[in-house]
Amino acid sequence: MSPELISILVLVVVFVIATTRSVNMGALAFAAAFGVGTLVADLDADGIFAGFPGDLFVVLVGVTYLFAIARANGTTDWLVHAAVRLVRGRVALIPWVMFALTGALTAIGAVSPAAVAIVAPIALSFATRYSISPLLMGTMVVHGAQAGGFSPISIYGSIVNGIVEREKLPGSEIGLFLASLVANLLIAAVLFAVLGGRKLWARGAVTPEDGGVPGKGGTESTGMGTGADANAGTGAGTGGTAPAAVAVRPDQETGGPEGTGIRLTPARIATLAALVALVVAVLGFDLDAGLTAVTLAVVLSTAWPDDSRRAVGEIAWSTVLLICGVLTYVGVLEEMGTITWAGEGVGGIGVPLLAAVLLCYIGAIVSAFASSVGIMGALIPLAVPFLAQGEIGAVGMVAALAVSATVVDVSPFSTNGALVLAAAPDVDRDRFFRQLMIYGGIVVAAVPVLAWLVLVVPGFG
Image 1: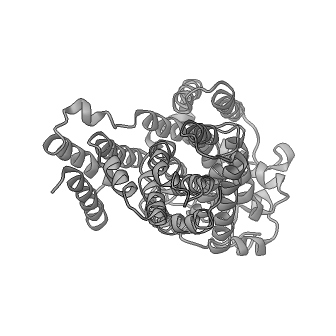
Image 2: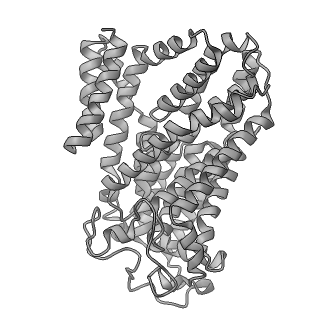
Image 3: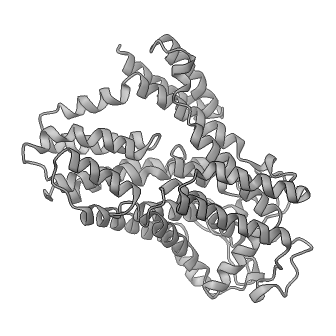
């Protein structure tokens, strides 16, 4: 049995044990990386740790730390109330506002994980307060980021168009952008309909003071799990006893700015300034989101230690372990050539259309655990030989690969999915993780073949 096949089988075993024995998958993956890396790939410790996602570790810790402080001092409550005021109480519009916001950020040049890191904590805090499915809100944020992710001036768009030009393939910058935009918009519309969007419309308008409570303009959340209703009265996953949707602190008296019901204290003003500084630093100066968030969180903790004392404990450590462990094992797979081995095996198939759909599936599966752009950078060159035969349109193939490799970023093992999982307050994280994994599996199974049918089979380009 080849080393590459052994490494894939070990990954399957990790999934099975984690699912059936409720062991943290990240811990299992670290053990698997050690075993496979040492015994099969002949890697030393440095080779194994080469795949450890240090940048993602800092992003997950920094962003969840900063927003834990924002939750502790009531800043996220103020933002949620302000958002309700902005859409005139129409809670059903908020998921689409978040979709459009992340799409606009990535379209003008923000890296997709940076946009999700900024928007997801606010979006999911809103979902908790107004009893909206966190799965709906989180996936709307991620799909919004990917909807704008391939504009001609975006990071993803610039990289993929550069690869196309380097490989001397026909390309269409606008075609690539529209393919991703339409695909993610359609997926978002389906999610909105399936995960409770229609009932959100039926709720009509609410006031910020309603808090999403049934009978006061709110209703019970629907879809594949919620946050507030799943844990109401139990505090599951948080250690509390009251649902966050109706919790009220003494300083939440009415009469705040614009009738939000929560006044701006010095700590909240400073936290809002820190959030603005995070956006400006990441988008305007291209600073690392994780390091910037940690720095801002430390400043706030130093100034207001009482508000921030519990914030470190609220960092999503179990999620950090899970994601870093799995990605370290994927790094071992890349180090020993497993991913290249699989791609080259598919590229050698003599039936171009079959090879095209298999490449889309490889892009989707691997991107669910690794860098989407990195995978496209590897797969587009592998498609060159059969694209040169003229039976497959280059523009359609590149667009299909781009869509297949990025819509799966809702997977909890991808950077965007991990950020959504880590940012969700007051939810049963194990349950939310399973929901994201199931949805990610559905996307991996369905989207590549649909992209192939729509973009590749007709022969665009």
